[in-house]
Each structure stands twice: as structure tokens, then as C-alpha cells.
Amino acid sequence: MRQTLPFILFAFTAVTVGCDADFVDLRPENVRAGGSTNSPMVDDSGVPMETTDDDSGSSVPDPTTQTGSRTLSPGTVVSSGQVVGVGSYTASGTASLVRTEGGTLELQFDDAFMSSNVPGPVAALSTRDVLEDGITPGEGDVLAGIFETPIRGPVAYVVGDEAEGAGFAWVYCNPFQVEVARAELTPAASAAGNGP
Image (cartoon, rainbow, N blue to C red; front, side, top):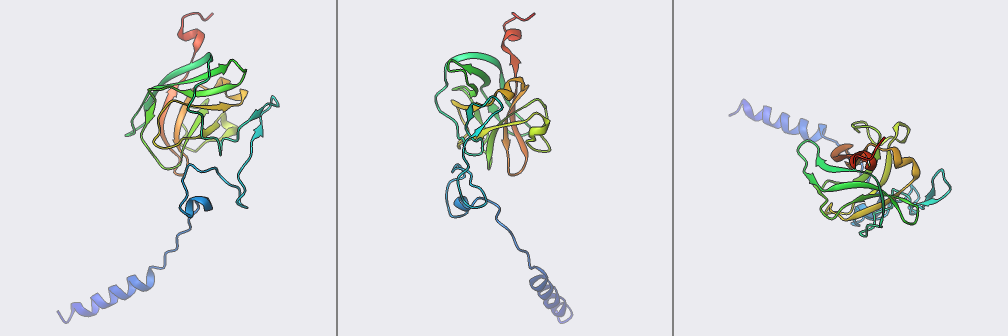
């Protein structure tokens, strides 16, 4: 016991002195203060982010604040696919790109849609079948908006016309860059057998 006591004291001292870890909370101030993770995103000065214009000049809600509508607008289905979980995550339902009667393009998840809950869940569209390096607009990715938790449908996000060529709809854990669920989107004309 006499020989182990100095070792124990040394190990305790080394751990307590050597462990000076600092953690920086990178979440928005409203979340750090106990707010919901579904609260609107804010810029560095704490101001909520506003809507932006897409290339067509129409007003598209800012995807960093858009939590989606629980009402699916009627329109014409451009493309759709079954939502499936990625890895150990579960998901079900259908994701569709819909040109609404009002002319806007929406990413819609139907009534049957559900997904495993994760921190910071977002809806995204992409031409890529893998998002392992994050949502990257320069690679054909479009951030559609933020999911409220629990992640379930119906929910719809207004997106810009650049999203019309997307081949995949995603449920994505943005803070940790983890793919949660995806739907491979098939053009409506091909799915119905009416294609060229």
C-alpha cells in the first residue's frame, strides 16, 4: 500500500492539473439561453435572418429560418420517391417536389412521413446521392428548411426553381453532418410511364 499511495497521488494530481478542457457552445444564443432548437436562426449580431430572392426574382423564404408548413399545397407533382432511413436511422413516407397552383416549387413530405429524431434536423435537396461532406450549394445542394421535432409529416418547404432538377430529398443532421434519411426522386412522367 505504501508504494501505491505515491503513484495514486501522482496520477490524481496529473489528471486534475492536466485536464484543463474548455468547450465552446456554438449553438445560437437563443438556444443556449434555453430556447427551442426550432427557433429561427440568427446572424452573428443576433438578428433573425430574413427571406432571400432566388434567381427568378421571386421571394423564397430563408431556409435557415423556414420551419415548413403543415399544409400541403395542391399542384402538379414534378418528382417523388419513398423516404428510407440511412444506416441505423428509420424513416417512411413520401417526399415530392410539387409545382403548386400558385407557381411556386415546394418540397413536400406526406402525411405518412416520419423520421428518426436527431439534433438540428434540416430538409435538403441534392443532385448527389451522398452528402457526407455537408450541404454544399456549389455541388447542386439546396437547403430547404428546418424540421420541427418530432420529425413527421405533413410538412412542405418553398424552394427556388434551381431545386427542380434534384434527384434526392434528404433529412440531414446539420450540426454533425449526418445523413438520416433520403428519397430518390423519380420524375413524375417517368413514374407514370408517360415519358418519351
